[in-house]
Length: 356
Image (spheres, rainbow, N blue to C red):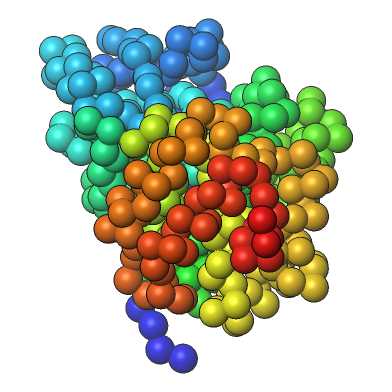
């Protein structure tokens, strides 16, 4: 066994019902005196409650999926004008992503309070979209200094969105199993993340107001993000970034739909990783475990349900080929990408098991 693994420096505070107190403590620890709060309009009330004890100088509500560069530019300018010395993000991946875009150029510390299972709060990955093209990168500066996980803040997330967001986190685990920088520590984290999410998501469906399932999902989300941040984005994430940037598809649902198709494509060429995934699901095979979970939680099934046109599939093929990561378990051809995307568009059984 020989590998190199780098752990990221970040404080994680996990306690249901204690977000306000934990956020105050983290802001004080970082010496903040001018806080910029970032939250979408729909979560403004929640953000007000969480930040009630902070010296807030600006509340920013313009948050859009995939972080358009225009929005990032306006937010950066506002942070400069108000001389913010701390960013507090309260929300999902788009909110955290905007905070990262600001700190990429402003160098401000971030305290992240997730309200979904996006996982962006625990990675050093940033993303910006310009003219239907999403660019992503890795920079240690964008990793939030602190993350406050409070499961009570996710209870208002509707079950369908909870499922899609949780499957997005599960996609981090699967991609981390064969990412370009994967090591045994990443795989151990990803396996535990799969186990936590596979237990948590059905519990959320069964009892949306209960905290047990939501805590398990948040725990799995954190593990999945740490694993992916270290292992690097695999084929699944590259496909979803292309689709999201080109067609403005909803992030979580896109990941939820594409995941089984990429798993079915890569798994036969990565038997050790496939066995780890299957064991984490407690199933005979990785795809059987994932498909059983998807049935249990009524997962999103087809990209056409989220705005992708059939004619868009062929247009996306070359863009995906251009970003296929090094070290993918098997070679990827244009025909492979086309078949995979068409199956995901239709909502077919995971390719290549489908003969449609």
